[in-house]
Every structure is written in structure tokens, then in C-alpha cells.
Image (cartoon, rainbow, N blue to C red; front, side, top):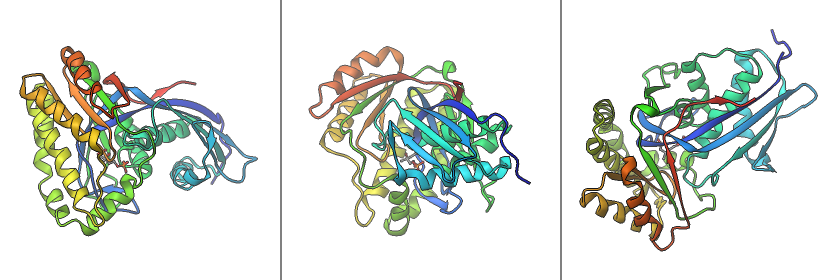
Length: 331
Ligand code: PMV
């Protein structure tokens, strides 16, 4: 039975996250179940604010992203909203107005904060009391990394075993204040990338000769990162994070046709970070499906790291942030 929503409007903020142990590849594309688990950190300073207004007079959802109506992105958003509507028991269509305070679709996990904010705002507007685990499953259906953005600090996404994805969800490992880290993001390109992570990882699974090994040898990385976080062992976290990043990109680069998400400045930043680390500065790099380099460091190292990456030719901007909280209700 369907009913009209009572409170029909809500606005929430969800932050972007970056995976330290990466997810790349799906076990089930239709249900968006990842082939591997992942561990991420939630970034305080990079967020999506999303307002949703359910409106019975609409015959289709409408999406305004960063001030522009985006019919091209609507299908993915509506499919995710359909799941929320089905569970909440409404058929009302919605106005979705979303703003990112950072470049969209350029390897800064705008889909993570975007879909986390979408399900957070939709369930709040519909007064649908959804437990965190179920909310993260809904977010996962929009974007795998979005399941992690609902939570703050250090977060683990479980790939799960169930064919219906019911145990493929994210949960917090450690709150942001319990181990403060700083993240400097070197922006080397602001335009949207040519091949998104979804199509990219599907192609890797089909064509990369390294993909099977990427999946097979992935679980020990999760164990190592979980242990490092529990022990606040920066050096151990640095080792496993850099390795996971390079293994993910090895799968991407060995895809047919190859997916090279990096540019020259990406590689130069990576080398600067490696040199700093070799000199004893507590910092490591990670890179998602895009050309931006994220340097993760202990708070005292922030200025050294900023100086090192900001002077790399091709770096347009450096964003600095700490670790942040999970989903926040704004209105
Ligand atoms: O959630 P998606 O479909 O945007 O995929 C994210 C993939 C990576 O960002 C490259 C890795 C990760 O775990 O976030």
C-alpha cells in the first residue's frame, strides 16, 4: 500500500571519502555488490549538500546538480530513489538539488558523497526510519563507495557473501577524533574524467589479466589496514594503502583499452610524497580513479607536505582537510 509522505522535505550533508584499501570490481553489477571489501577515511572538508522535496504534482524526478539541471544523471539517481520509495511506501517523485563544494566527477568521490546524501535526504524527507546498515545498503546501490560516506572517520565496507547483497554494507571502524589525520589533495585536473569508475572497473574485470589476482590477494590488505588503524600504526597503514592503490591502478592500466587515470603531475606528486616519506616524514599517497593525488599525513607534517606538492608543475590547487563525521541533517 502506498501513502503520501508526511514531511516531504529534508536537506543533508554527506562528506566524500577516499579508500585506503581500494574497491575495484563488482561481484554483482545489477545489485552493485563489490567483488572486494574496502577501508576508507571520510574527509571533513569535501562535501555534498542535498535537498530533496517530494512533490505529488511531479510525474518524474528532477535533478539540479551544482546549479544546472542534469537529465543525463537522472536515471541513476531515480533508480536509487525508487529503492527508497519502495521501502518507504510512496510513489511521489522528487526535486533533488545537490551542491558539491569540490570538483564533480574528477576522482574526488563526488558519487560517494552524492549518493550518501541522496539516500540520507530521501529517507529523512519521508520520515523513513532506516537503520544505518540498511541505509548503507541503499547508498551502495547508487555507488559502491557511497555506502562508506554515511559514516565518519575510518570506515570498512564488507563485500558480504549473500547473493542478495544483504550483508554487503559499511560500518565505522574508528571515529575521526580518535586518530586525527590530515589529507592534502593535489588537484591536477578539474574536468570530469573520460571513463567513470563503474564502467572502468567492469572493463578491468572483463579484460585485465591481473584482475583475478587483484581479487584473490585483496583480503590480507583489509586485515593489515584494520590492524594498523586499531593500533594507530601510521607506517603500517601507509604501506598497505600505497600498495593497495598501486595494485588497483595496475588492474586499471592492464585493462583493454588501458585505463590510465594519471597525468604527469599525478606521477610527480606521487614521487614527491615517496621522497618525503623516505626522509622520515609521516605521509603516504593514494589515488582513486582520477588524476588527483591524496597525501595522507600526521597533522604535524601538513606544512612540509603542502610545500612539497604545491610546487609540482601542473598542480592547480591543494585542498587540505582533516577527517570528518558521517551524515549530517541540515534542515
Ligand atoms: O563507488 P564507485 O563506483 O565510484 O567506485 C569507487 C572506486 C574507487 O574510488 C576507485 C575506489 C574506492 O574504493 O573508492
